[in-house]
Amino acid sequence: MALGKPRWRGYPAAVLVVGVLAAILKAIPGLSPTSVALLLMLAVFLCATVWQSGPGVLAAILATLAFNLLFLPPFYRLTVEDPRNVVALGVFLVSALLIGRLSALSRLRLGLLEAERRDLIALTELSQGFLSDTNREALLGVATDRLRQALQAERVAIYVSGPDGLAPAGGEADPGVRQDLVDLAFRQGSSAAFASSLGGTDIYLPVPVGLQRAGVLVARGMRSSERLAEACAPLLGLSLERERFVRLAREAELTKASDEMKSTLLATLAHDLKTPVAAARAAVENWAATAPAAPEAPLARAEMERLTRRVDELMQVVKLDAGIAKPHRERVSAAEIVEAAVARYGEALESHSLFLEVPKNALAVEADPAQVTEALGHGLENAARYSPPGSRVRVTVDEDGADVRFRVEDQGPGVPEPDRDRVFERFVRLPGAGAAPGTGLGLFIAKRLVEMNGGRIRMDEARPAGAVFEILLPRAAG
Image (cartoon, rainbow, N blue to C red; front, side, top):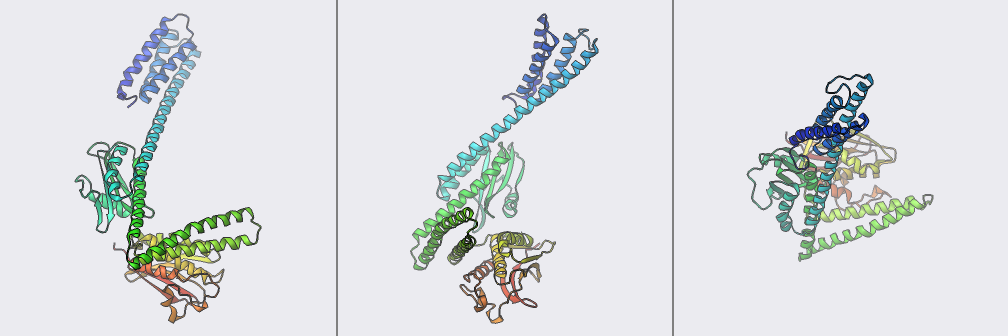
């Protein structure tokens, strides 16, 4: 479409525009060939701008023929007397084609910019609407209509994750939705788009929330861009996550039992600590940046990072005790878990030699990737903390019967056999820990996270010296 009219109309229009202009120019006596050429090129530009490339090319060819037949001697014949006019005619044709093409491209790009502007407006309106809803019933009750209007779709369905698996918002499933694509989008995080029987496009998109997924967005008969739909999915995920936090806050306010109140107060304390600690850390970093030569700067920065880490560990323990940190299991490869753990906790290993031995075959587990990554990260931090600088830390992954084994081996003093179970209890620090920083919560958190995902964790001795931290998780089927 161009200017709201079928594109085929541009071809007769181009014939008419060039023909009428050529006739008018022929009727005007005394016009030079240069003036005629410029005016005919103007007609080509007009046709390409209004009706895009095809009519523009036709107009360029017709203008060249008209220029040759009507304005270059011998008239009304396709031959040219003066050889110089042959060159002029060729230049005219090439120039007319280029002008037509560039004009059509500029019009197309302008259309794309306008479409992006409309998408941004739609996203802005959606975000404003989602932010005004503070409970799931209100959010999901109107999100379907808002998304249908923004995506110009015939039908929109939202599937949300719950205790019993995926379920459509509102409880009524659309019979035209393919359940296999919904499950695939949720389990693997992959999208699918294809021509719709309702016209336009059917698209299935996972609704991401951080490293996890909150559900699936399905739009059928969509006539807007796929890019807009892909932007709507994370926006919906953020809205659902915001609603979840609001709901948790309300439930905490309504908690009356003493044990639950203790967990709530601890969570509030840990949360309240984050803001002043973050502000203090920012102030220390700014001071260190303005006074890099100050000998106290590295020490102050390190201590603030250590305090931040302690607050994060406290919040994690509170979530575990309150039962909030429930795993969201999915199939994930062992190599991805090791890569994520090294990327997140690798800073602690900067003064050590890190060796990775991860098999190329597709070893995979069915677990919460974020929780297993954090558990393995605590093992890496523990190895770095209690082994001397410059020593080797070795990470391996292999099979142990029906399990996948993650193994972190260091060259530190090791853990005595009677204490190998006790180190996973909260606030336990062995006498040999010395001045190494820590609160005794890291291994406790790692043990709880692994057990929540159906795995086991243990400590062993390395040969000839050192400690071995092992995580065993059931291998994913298939």
